[in-house]
Length: 191
Image 1: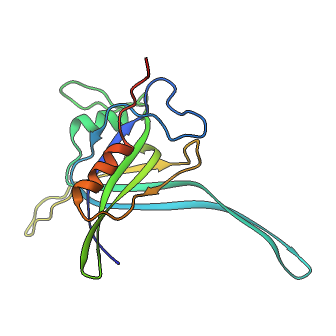
Image 2: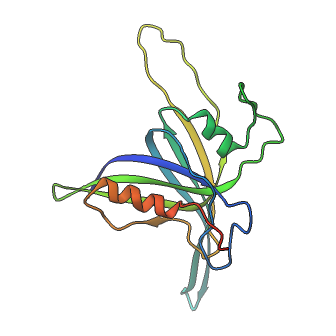
Image 3: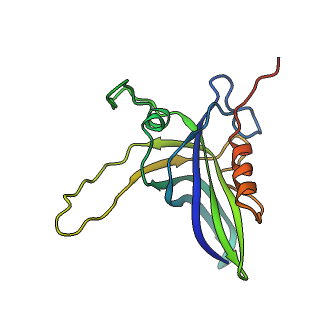
């Protein structure tokens, strides 16, 4: 299997009322695009404990505690910054110490090549929260280089225990995108 691409990054904040039912995935509000995906990297933190007896390992337990998801895009849309970071402003983007980034979900599509056949797979993180990353700007000098925007999400388990979900392999990009859309679909209350 060879991973060769990634696209269609989306974020959706939790639904305002009862966003996390017990033993279930979260309920979501209105989805926003994170822009054009350049790279996505996840990293997991775990706690582990072991017990030895009679000169051998008797018990061992390892559990995921939290994770980070670093997303790099060509450009983060201004409206998306407000949705994921909780910043304010009409014309200017104002970041302040009162900003409250919302919990939400993230999904994107991974491109794969297996035995010379193209496949696409949806990747979904049900419970994440964005944290602002620093920016770097460089003068163009003799050579120019493009740079994009970075977003770090900190995540944990949803109430049903899930922290990452991978779809089946699809033979069409549209099917993998549809899977992501389904995972991040806006909740509609009954009634």
